[in-house]
Image (cartoon, rainbow, N blue to C red):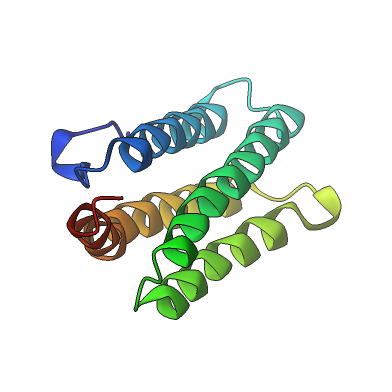
Length: 133
């Protein structure tokens, strides 16, 4: 199960706090998938919350990148759009899919988030700190 670890910190408080919330919601996705009383409706509700929070978080980061003219903004936006598309395609038409499908989705979310934090967001945070943002 994914849990916040200080190694995930990008050393920018606003981003770290939002990452903690994202990780918490992804934990709920895993719980919904692994619950013996697996409920498609419950899982979709959690995925909808995740989708809504991703919008909040990405808007926050993208506003910072735009405001401070982050030179790697286009690549970062592209990464965000990849996850937006994945979430949208997962929820598309709310068609009930197999538990394996959602397990794969959870694995994708987990891997995407950790890789994104460790590689992409840490670069952004260094830039922001350097700009005294």
